[in-house]
Length: 287
Image (tube, rainbow, N blue to C red; front, side, top):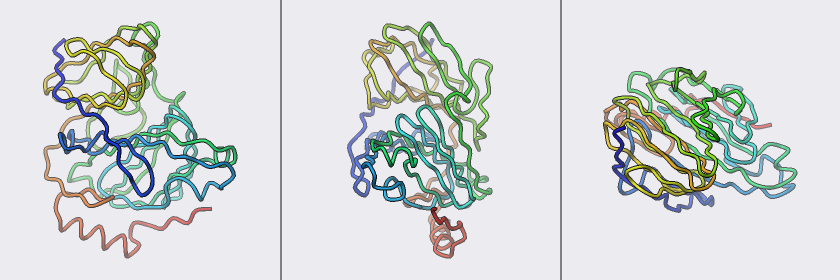
């Protein structure tokens, strides 16, 4: 199996409006791993009894990409301007395809807000192709038990979030070809992950530590980007490991970004700002 790690990207600590975020992408060494633009790993504290609408992330707009929330711990209550409202717990997925515009919030569930604790989440931004940036917005969610399951080896499970793997297909639709999966490995397990030909590939270690054949030690809160043409990775888990596999066909398109908007040029960014201010991306009133 051809497998070469191009870059090791340690997540850097950043302050996002008072939230402590581990940012693995973008970083100085990598602006993007096309079509993946951003990877944030965040633990959002929830103070007991403060009320769900006083915690988490308040309503905000998006356009031109998909915001994917991978729930590690706690419960996340998604609401949006399309009228969607759903709570997803550990192992689940919330997939916001922003298209031409959507406003959404990410709050703790009422249960989590009452008891206190934290929302431990990863947010991944997936760029949309230029010809699909202005499609209607949509939202999809899945609990862990609803995601296709592949047993890679004894004590190793892969939950398929998007795309295809080992003959299985995920239910969540994507706007470009990607394979996205979460892998849970027990201590001492040996397994292989396969990447599709022509896809950019990276592994984010959510927790745990192990070794990748031909590279050496890999550890939590690091993103490992593979050389183009890599066929996969052979991994030995030194303890329990939780891994996010991120692979996708590159778009190779011009990129223009401003906050929550991802387009192809600055004129489109200005149009996005104007449309949001005019309410064309919808309005979210939380209840």
